[in-house]
Image (cartoon, rainbow, N blue to C red; front, side):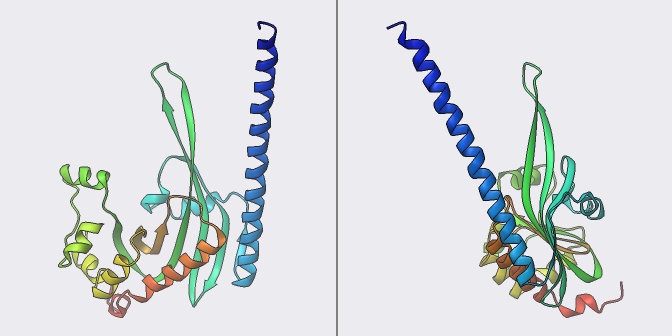
Length: 231
């Protein structure tokens, strides 16, 4: 019986090793398929594509809250160009955070998500529209309250913040409220000349195209007078 234990241990290690290798191979194949899908998408939509790490985008748009987290911030797999008469960027975004456990061991966590940017022909104050959650409710306790609207359902579903309440009301007009209530997964940010959407994971190519369409739909619901007012 004792002689079998080393054999069982070796067999277990072999099985674990095979599982690890298989997982790594599958992850590599999935990443390759996604890259090929992004290249095909860029060609079909006549957009530029760059797969490499892009630190310039992180620096250029660091005023956006979603892009100002952690360290080692960069974009990758960047789609860029004109989409339905709008200048857009769509990319994977990376940042990392450090944590230390009770024994002093440091751990680096890498975060990835998809991000979309549409350039606006005017400059605007900061506005964020996100789903209400535990953290937004905690923030309200400490004085970081959101803006309420006539639509109780919208106010309950989304957390809206801006230093300019009039601008927030202008953006969250009846058409916009109706659209966002029908697309409750969206996290929206406007600041300077940027309209942006953020997601919590890296999207597949077909999801990227669908969200480029949603980005333009949101743009179409911004009132025209916002772009003709004297700034």
